[in-house]
Picture 1 (cartoon, rainbow, N blue to C red):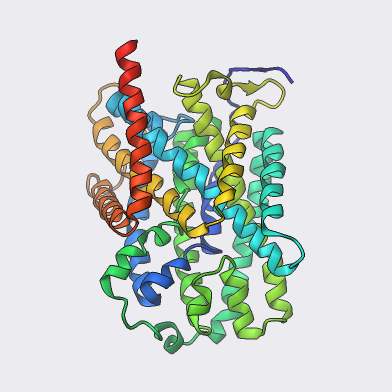
Picture 2 (cartoon, one colour; picture 1 turned 120 degrees about the vertical axis):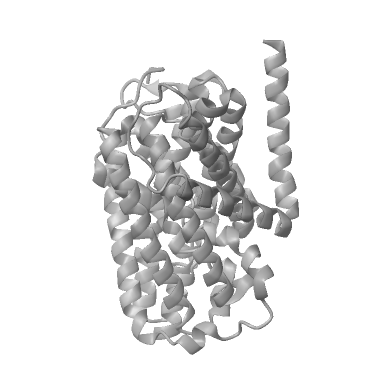
Length: 429
């Protein structure tokens, strides 16, 4: 198939943007967040979730302004470059790639765990590798087709979570939710922040399809805001109900907490537990698919800007999709699967997300002062909302570095090498 660098095709409507916003994130309701219980207990993690929910709500209302003013496939990279030049763009691009390239491997491992729960004869790694191969091919075939698939899978995933809440709500007991919470305290709350971030991580990926949205100035705000409201309701509901049906400690270190929670209420061999594990794949698929769209567009944009090899920025002449960006991202994801440590991958992905949020909010303050930037959606209660998002992001970053020093050193060491390379390139050109 011949390929060439060209523009992306505008096909997305508000319902697609909403579905992508929810689909990017919804796997966070299915697994990952429960690791926060291990370090903070249910009560401490609930506090961490409230802090992060405020962060994301303020962030989305603020980030939407950048997305509509600068509708670019590079997302935060494009905003930071506009605000702070190439240096800002490099930092944002690195943070975005860490977030979007490392979240899918964690989801792929969870997909494998769900299937293994249903069929113990099938290995986790087989399913994870198969997911990468299948959905890379689906995304290459076309954005419209990918968006329709994402819409269907996201609606099924939301429906499943509503069924989950309905099935378990009658079994919820507050005494069970607050049990076994002694000995955690505020240090646990801060240590749990990256797992609370996982409940919403990736929603900013909507910005990376801005070049493929019909009338982005109206479409993106509608989809974004409805998306965050949907996710807040689902995240808080799932977390509360799951913690109050049995001994929540049994759920704090596994990749399939929701079917396990149903099994605790209805029995390990119950039809509901097996059924939920089966249809639970929809939520994981929705996020895996959505994040794949996100990282491919980020790789595409960085390549188009000359920060990555040019071939990655080529668009397939038949399907008008960035096929090389999809393939390169899949290769990186497949290599990341070798770690097999879901919680560590989640924390690294959260490092990328939080740095992205910090530079994005700084970019918003700067872009507002740049003459000639197109007017569009305006952040409500400006500057309060972006300032709250910025401060809470800084709090999360400090806490994450404090409690995950090795991963923090790894993240910032790579960033330092990238910046060193940037300065050397600038000096020689």
